[in-house]
Length: 48
Image 1 (cartoon, rainbow, N blue to C red):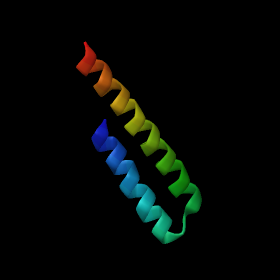
Image 2 (tube, rainbow, N blue to C red):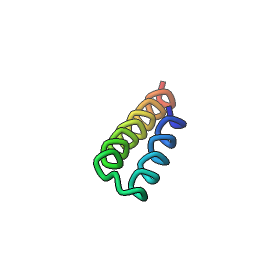
Image 3 (cartoon, rainbow, N blue to C red):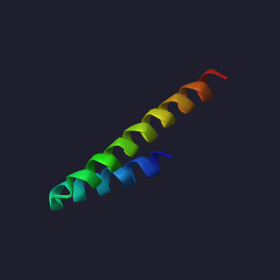
């Protein structure tokens, strides 16, 4: 899941550099939610 978040982050950076701000914003939002989901699942797995 963290790999997907990094992939979306790279896509957002490339899209932002090319001027596609709509795509960059969307992929950055997806990357943010994937990182938060990863962190939540990591904490839950450490506690159990």
